[in-house]
Image 1 (cartoon, protein in one colour):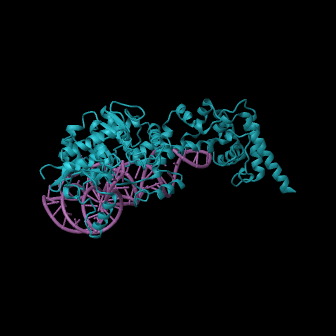
Image 2 (cartoon, rainbow, N blue to C red):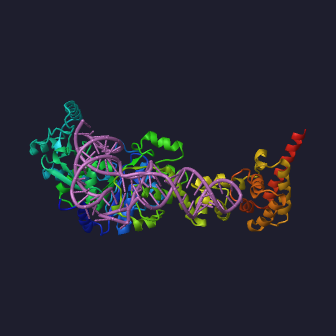
Image 3 (spheres, rainbow, N blue to C red):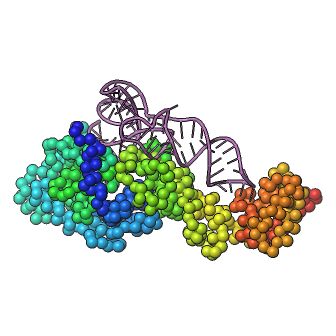
Length: 510
RNA sequence: GCCCCCAUCGUCUAGUGGCCCAGGACGAAGCCCUCUCAAGGCUUAAACAGGGGUUCGAGUCCCCUUGGGGGCACCA
């Protein structure tokens, strides 16, 4: 082979890679927006932005039976939440509107017949029943289950007459029977298929709507799409699509087929069952759920970006950094297993990177009892402890409760007697009462002196106070927690804890 | 069954014939820091699926095997 794959790709690049890319995310509104779709959309977005081109949302709703109401809205909300702003789309319009395929019927009809005129397609009158019968027969004979070509050689004028008379029909692509077709995928290089393997696929259904094969090729051409990024499930019909584009005499876009996502075990693709299994462990493959679970979009984006895209160096990136660094050549054609613990990692990293005011703003829905200024005081206490935003309440709920209810057993520190514990509380009370307000920096030194004084460890003393003030053994840093809680409530809780222990000893004594 | 695609630590990956006794990240283990939990720092274990070629030299190129994935609709 004189031309290596790399040389070939380099050649393609020279033609297409340096000019502004027009990309499209073209989902069908048949279900929920998931990881796979989001990643495709992300790569589309990245390519468009880094080349100064456009990113388009196109709804492929040509299957009226499978269309699920509301899923287009979920798609749009998902893209917005992720920050993947599109330049053209059904709700924002654009120079190539409409962007919903169900509203472009006439266009497909026109192009289907253009292919018929050119002799590259033909009307087919076979009933679904006959098709089914033929398929079964061929299956029994272990032949390929493709269309048998019954209507392929009908007299064109005769066929046209039958169509005019209103006979139900579809339009099929007249795939060549001889020779081979070579289609070039950017990640895999040339893929050559013998043409007899390519079926006479249906382009226009009997309901007048196109199949994907026609609709996507027509729209990609009409809308000036330069790079088609789609799932690898299209690899098997890839030669067909190339053939269709060539039959029209159009310029081919650059093709990129992305691998599928596998279940976390790496064994098999995600199924509905696996999806609900993920839910049970607090994760999800659906964008809407991830948002509800409190993940930040930056984390989700970073996570999905790196499933199939390898970077050298720092792999923590914002959307802007990804735009700068994205490179189609570094995409991996191999299937990737979903790794939710990595999602946790990226979510935590991006939460920590958010400016205080921004984190406070995002936390607001989760802590409705707090206003923004309070939230900004809370953020430093919990920032590096959050994996998801919805974990915030469990860290700082003690700030919003009238009183806490420590377990007496937890109040008494490790290797400490009840008497020692009471002593800690009594002395801490004395010390803190002398402060007009509890400032973390100011109260730390005296409390540490108390540790010395009582001959206990810091862990023991602060542990007692922690449980008394927050009601639990795990909390944000003690001094800071007291500061935000405020002097009065802190002192009250210490007194309450003391009373609790005294009541206990009375009971025990009696 | 037929066709197509893919193959580096458990997982995501770097690697485009010598820079690799294979680098990073997540996870795991250990240590440090430390008022708990985190965060942070340091360290460790952990991979080129197998077999043939090509080449002075192969994780990198070719072939086979194996394994995984996708597809075989008037769905996308």
